[in-house]
Image 1 (cartoon, rainbow, N blue to C red):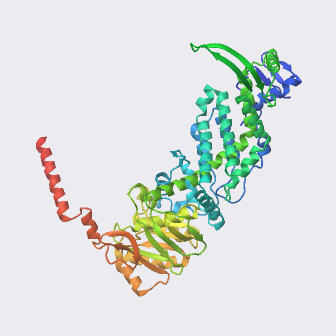
Image 2: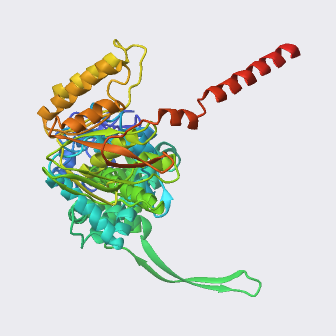
Image 3: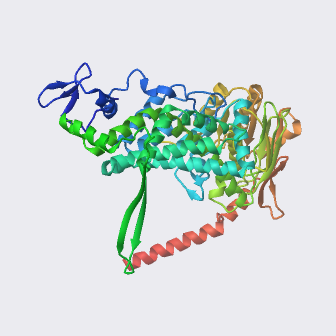
Length: 601
């Protein structure tokens, strides 16, 4: 991308040797020595950003990565730099920069989200459960980035503990959490300016660009001063901020902003009469900021402008200032590219804290889980966070799985919570292995190599197989792609076929699961088959859970060891009004309505 000077229009150009050319009369001028620097600054934006010279002293600036413990420069920065340049010039659309941020890399996860994201309603989870509240105000967030973070959790404890340490420090140190919110809000303000760049840059281009630089200065100051004592990965914000603040480019930007805000201090003596009118005004003292590198004495400013007019460059005072601002921006823009990426990382932790606060407000506890390779799976007070948006208060339950018996067969009544349990287990694993809060009071979980869920089945008009055939394809995909030590969640296997054949398939699946060494939860409504497996102890790796009933045979949405004795299908039908008497009443009522409508016609 090349920046072309629109301010000079057709009057000023350059020849192949870089000399200034007036295109009106084709005369060539060698700029006077005193104007050389000024003209170069004016036309800094007209030079092509080639050979990556533009990165300057920020070529090796690391990304203050809050998701990955490794130190890197971040992803391909050229595209984001181009978008920031366009926004600074007032030519970018509102969504381009945010789209680039949503698409930033999220780490080195090895899970394939196609095997679980839809079944766990991951998009709905991010949309309905996670929100971004900064200093009491809800602000937009990069939801696609967060969804991609959750869909690609790390599979090593180093990454997980790095993220957990950041979240724990934010929880234990309110001052640091407040500093994080202030920083996120400042970067949000910076992006908000760039989103509105077209209108603001068109109306007051110089003021708009100075405002962008001011907010960027505030961001860097907050980074250097707000995270000095951080002990987790948050300290990277301080380190990168110090490096930027100590650069020549940042010092030049500060000098320009100081010059714009305070070129001189004037002491006035003013006398007001009894009628409120000004009677006397006298300048007592005038102190100019002569040490500022952008300061010019009045006669020097007048003389520079006169020479510009003499050479017919056609530049006004605002245009001169604008080109100086552009030159300063181009020096600090590579650092700005690094910093704006950080907002997505900050949003992950702040959104997790908001989710935790909203859960606790409903009496539901969350925790930073213990996570180890090869450990048992244990949950205390596990709840499904998807229910936070659609019910008053989800009912938590306890769950424990021994690695000696890693396959659990779950039985229970219809509408007893089996499907929600599988979703809760999957979501807890996703959040916990992503280094965030798990939706439970206490948790211990293993690091799993992948997640495979078959919980929902949506019929599509273009699918080649029927419902049972589609389910078999998914099972085949499981055994083809699920690595050892995966979490497998299978809901109501073979519910769409006759019991005798379904039992044969379920038995096959349970025996084959044992061979791929997973952590698996399988629900079924074939109770006779489950009772037979329990009584015969056919599979050593198999354990059994059943939905708990209350004294009135209603579901408590908690789970206890054993196999359910009934699915309470008749009770569910009664509860939902599907009885002979109820349906007969509805048919009779509908018949009477149709008869009345016919008589009216």
